[in-house]
Image 1: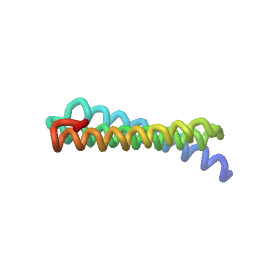
Image 2: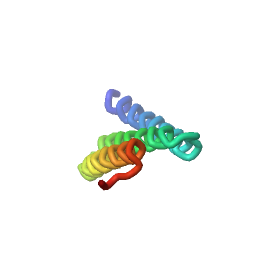
Image 3: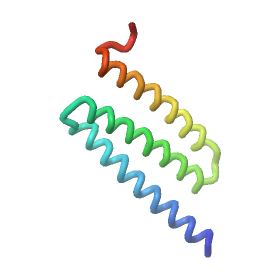
Image 4: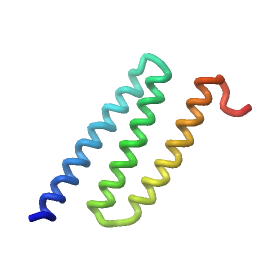
Amino acid sequence: MTATILWFAMGYAQIALALAACLACVRTLRGPRAQDRVLGLDTLYVTAMLLFVVTGLRAGTPFFFEAAMVIGVLGFVSSVALAKFLIRGEVIE
């Protein structure tokens, strides 16, 4: 019974995270300012990373965890680069 509840809870979490990713895409595309678009991209990479983690838990394969770590590192680096670009106007000095 507990495994069944956990299986359905992870399915619900996948649906909720997919919906959150779609809403982050909307914010990224419709954001009136550049800061809104950066915030949408940050939310998108975090939700994608969490979606991979939940999928990895549900499938039981370590591949999804490695992909989630790569998404997290690349998302962090891109957030720092975009923040630097918005503040200074250039990324490479």
